[in-house]
Length: 68
Image (cartoon, rainbow, N blue to C red):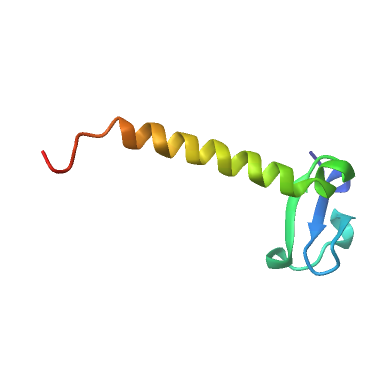
């Protein structure tokens, strides 16, 4: 994905912006391949968090009991 095709979600302005208009890295989310995906950043974050939570639970369930 080249920078000219990247989109970011600007947390300050609350809009999707192309790479050449993005602000500081700590004020943006991305890169995303399309404007639509940048605008739907929250769904992507929630899906990733759910997947990480599931992976953590699977890992925890595979550990020996600490009390043992």
